[in-house]
Image: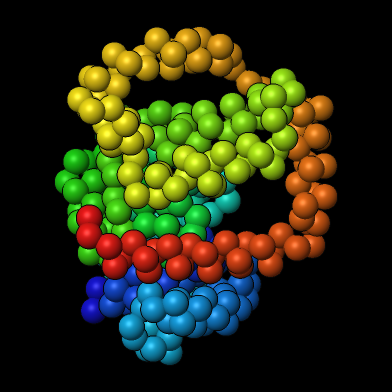
Length: 309
């Protein structure tokens, strides 16, 4: 049984552990904070039970959980692993230190992947002897429900390492996409940033309430986007496809983008949106609402699995 090392037992690390274990791989889980990896097992067990109840795993939760083991040390965690998935703090210095240690501990053939949401691999792997086997494998939260994984290598990442990582992600049921070069925030976050910035601008400029902007996405754009991306969407929105769409709507859409100046998250607008959200959902209910979100994602994933592509 192939072994994967998951470094960091927070929310993302726990979700990755389930992704690899439900695909039949052995998982070793380690966290720098004493007792965290062991405590994560109970949380993972609960999440696996939810996945099983939603019909997203066919094995019993106990059978999947048995493939995950907490490790006492980082060396124990990575020993014998074919792939390391790092989920440490989203700060450059700790990531540099951790990857230096991983590079020292792991044989040259082991892939070292980071779940970072925005730190390019070139910033924390450049001085490593084994920098060619390092890359970013950025998931969407939570990866056990949302399968997309962005694979982003540094300029020196071996293309064979990207290919191996893509094959592994395919093997465990994720949907890997490959960036040809590093960009700030990678691709998914750049797409999200454009939409979120425009949402804040609509509130800032008195165009619409935060709740109604949310409705524009969840009851409008999001329904299509749960099955197709922006290019397929516009391809189907004109009889002649993309070229026809641009001919019909290009001037309108281009004019809109000319109005979309950079947005810096001004404090008054952030405060206004915060106040509206807290009136709708007190802070102490965020965890419960997140659990509700995950149950809805489970239902959507189960539905999409049953539909033709």
